[in-house]
Length: 424
Image (cartoon, rainbow, N blue to C red; front, top):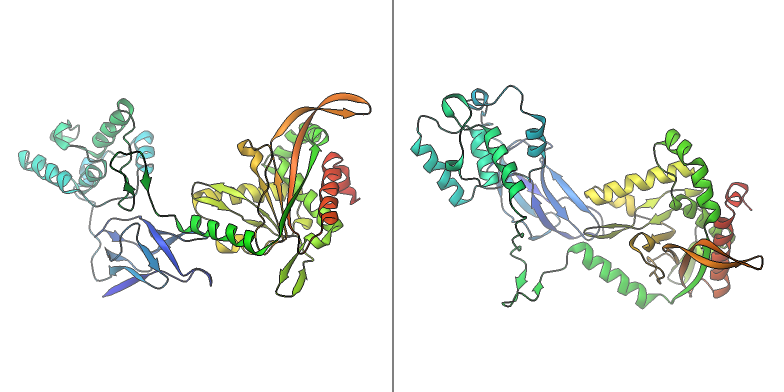
């Protein structure tokens, strides 16, 4: 009996994705709930699990765009699980070194055996027929593409063990320089190697589409202010050690700005609204999106009900979302909704920018680098840690006075953090 592996529905707005990688080898035996593929969509990267156990055969290739509901593989449930205990149990030491285990964990997912490597393995086995390789050794030789003829076995009667192959792989990686990656088949390289072409990933296409949509459908304007972070930096310095000890995370700047945004949205509720046709929908909750940069693009997970969260809960949520985003574990539910967005270009060194709003929201706050600058204070020039802030807003919903007031309220809260506790 064969079971089809189909791409599941991932949300109303997602119709297709790119099969970015197979996590198992063609023809291998998979267990129930074992990760078998990774699908990249225009919103998230989703990992697919095997629903049944059996031998898997692919009907779609890596890099191929597949529709929701499409069959990408078949799993033969009638196939028996191969027994790898013999002779692997004879040749493997009772406990491998932690170093070898660590090396094994860091290897990429199993891949199909290249023809040349398979030929080398068969030749080596033919030349020493009395010492055939165990399934475990054959597998690791295929993955590392190491010529078995170059190895000296340390097992019984000179048998090559998995540890021998792993040690050879480690020695090779230490003594050789990094090998340039092979360009995927989807990439087209010009003959003079001065440029290359590759299709946009689904998430990058979606980002591009939404940014253009925002520019075309909203009347975006930006206003600026600067914030003196002396008080916040002093507060963090005084209480950082106790905060970390009690909560397990550092007290960062982002929790102050999230709370400051809630404070400012309460003062200027027009920014916490959106247009739907000819109606204006005003939100009475404070779900704040925090932009997180990943290798595949920008994602904006949402912190729910920030008015009710403590500083520690905000910091913990941001840390967890960042881990999920960079590991590909972010979900649609994590990013849906949101009343307002904060983006921090300062972590990349940005001094000033005009961020683009995240539709259908009406505002986005841009944070920037903290720089010590001379400022006039009480008739004297002093050096203070200053940050430029930018508010981009939809002029159809928010007028200039309201936008300026929002940044002033934010500035007051950041320069006098006690306001956040007192609600003034």
